[in-house]
Image (cartoon, rainbow, N blue to C red; front, top):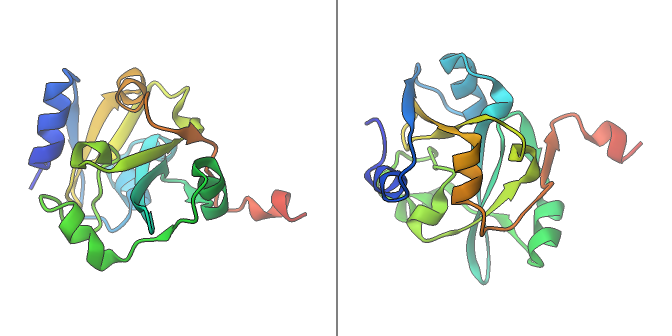
Length: 164
């Protein structure tokens, strides 16, 4: 499949240079990073959330776990995970579960993790399970500069220093 048409049009409309990294079929963003031989913390994982006001896509490093409480506090909303069945209607030109980080291209609100603030390179899902889009970190931040951001995730073993 390569890159979703909506995502490609969005990147081109914003004059963002990108290249594509092919990898073996994967089921998660973390698996995509490993398969593509790129740094896992530089792969952006998109997590679709919802409440009675609509959908929000949270973008966090693939190595991290989204903290639903932190993102809800950041946005002043009571968010919960969207069901996988809803994703097909939101991302019609993407394979199920291969949600691009630039979900604003699909008319959705995005909140992103501040851990992307200092990265020089970032990889996002292209809309299938075999391709990543590689862009410069400065372009990532420019495309999402009007979107809310905060620390909304931590490495998967973060409970040891929060609860301890």
